[in-house]
Length: 318
Length: 216
Ligand code: HEM
Image 1: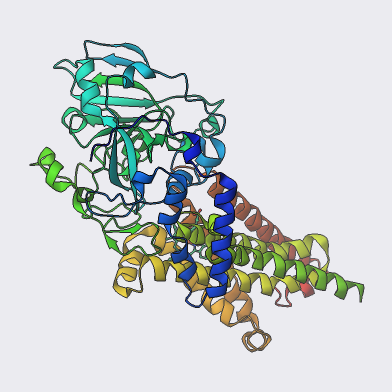
Image 2: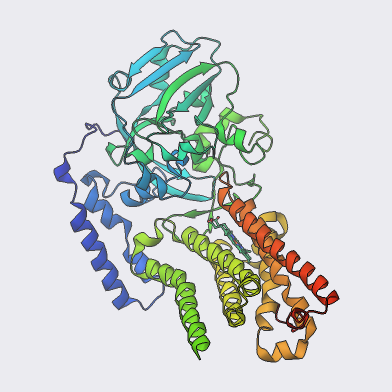
């Protein structure tokens, strides 16, 4: 599903917030009137409606490769785990107003022939942006279907020419406590660090995202550049990346450092390996209220990625 | 007379305050979806769990408050606070059973057995059940001194509730630690009171009479 389109959507295509809010109030009011069945009002909060309202028309009937409906733009941009802006799900949308994703530089280092400081524009220029609809499965056992906008990480890595010593790629999130209030407390070990094995990083499903719903990433979703690895738990998808390093040893990723009993390096979605505090066998497919959907091995992308892990004990390498 | 007024006023405040979270959640579910956000069940679990914990702490504050202030009628807030705490614990548990366990008793038992954070939460809830059932005047009379002993279970439930919360958070333990601190102060106040009572009894001071009246 490759759709070429410039990343900036003219603001005229976006319905003013006021209209949108009134519409929701109206739906809500109508809902009370009709509230026979307890859950009817939630059904009325049909996500397709606000997709139509806020985002380009091409998303109206878009489905994931597994033929799933998209979650609403609103849900995707108001329900985020981004501890740099606070630990509640609505903190990132509320607290990221001061964050300035432009201008942006990415520092590339380690075992590669093209290290250096790259302006974001220089990182992006050679690549063709495309929509990619993936299910994002959070380690907390909920999931959403999200149309990302970006380019394959493999294309970028090829340009940077890693050497034979580069076994892993390591990413870092920017550190700006002035703009990221969550970083003023040591809830996690800043900077946030994530990494991939080189074959995982080169896999065609692995995406460098600059946008969502065809529009630039909002700050709360990891502007201006983030990682998406659809067969892994969401915390692998590091946001607001300002360092990329090619390294020999497996990087110590932040959540593993924080609690290695609960979070590993690989973090592949796996219904057979439970989080110590909850089962990973089932997930809540938002906007559903029930946690009754069976989680798929590798989040449903097993056909494409299972070979990367053949012979590995995934109970040990969680 | 004036005292009756004051108690009534406090009770009105208590009812409004205690019903506010439930009202907020109901409005969020049925009128203002933005109040509960993209994952309403998480919000519901969060708010009901937090409210249970706060109400349990308030319930435990009443007795020391009476002791410190010397104003006895405040004790009449204790039962409604405790019952509201139980009400929210019941909601919290039911939401989990309905939406997370999807009415599946096998899954529920597995989770209770396998996940310590659920085990202690469930234990706290189970402890609160007999306390809620025996909170009526009739039961207080029938059980006599045993009622006081039984209702010390609130301390156990509150402690388990705080442990449950502490084990639940992923990285940010600041708020659970605040609750641990509050609990420590409440335990301190209790121990202090017990010590005073003992020395008071030795000195045959009238306070001993209040302490033995089964109002703890
Ligand atoms: C007196 C008893 C209880 C108290 C005081 C209590 C309190 C809490 C608190 C404060 C939270 C954290 C909410 C948040 O910050 O998001 C929580 C979460 C939770 N509680 Fe309880 N709880 C109690 C009993 C139970 C019981 C009986 C169960 C189920 C058997 C339970 C299941 C849960 C679950 C599943 C969560 C996590 C929700 C999530 O994943 O977002 N709790 N509880």
